[in-house]
Length: 356
Image (cartoon, rainbow, N blue to C red):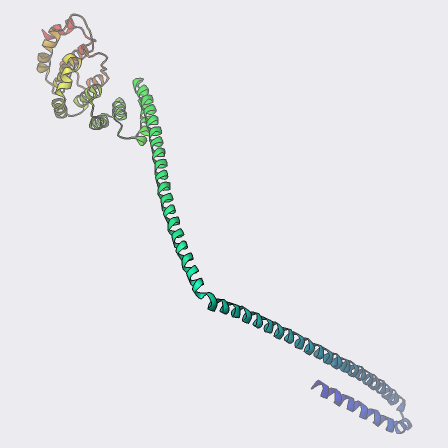
């Protein structure tokens, strides 16, 4: 479309050019012709320039056509050469493949039986090798599991021994704290030790003593009972301490039950004086001053003169605390003197005066 418009433009310019050439003399003869002549001259120059530009473009177009033809011929020649190379390569590959298949076919027809026999033999050897390898692997796995079990057992034993040593060290340290009546510190260490073994009888007994020292007597009684349940060997000291705490801060019927169960142990302890000591506490708990004096008379009269402890190093700290809670009166005064007599804090002569 653009080429068509250009052609019409050129044709119009050419027509005007011819027209003005033939009309120039007539126009020149008329007034004001000089201006028109100038305009015509300008149009003529424009037309000449347009013709020159078109000629240049036509030359460029012809050169491009020549280049296109050359490139086309070169591309065609290159394509033909490549196609020929590919065809040659395909032919060579076909020949090689044919030769290989021919060779294999020849071998196959010639020794198919031998190949089958060799293959069967190789298959049998492979299966035997596989079975042997699997047997060795299973044996190795069993050995490895055994070693792992032994290692785990050794580690478990070592860990158990280490925990046992730690428990014993803590128990020894707690015993020292309890002996020095540092019950708060002892309870903190007991919590740590209980995480290692909460059923260790010596630890439970120390826990009971500590709880009683902190005036938590009900918890102390429970810990004592747990210790007795876990320990097949009866600890006389812990048993007697537990019975005293039950008598003072527990139920007297519970004490009677425990006394009947361990009567032989209690009657044999401290030459029988501990049983008389407990009997005196029972009378005080029952507010029975008459029974208290009646039970104490033979004990006091059979004792040697002076004031000597009948219970060794027995401590009256729990007794003192209980008596402090009693109402003032004769029972409180007389009862405390009788109990102190057992630990050598009151003389035989003083008690004989009370019994008259």
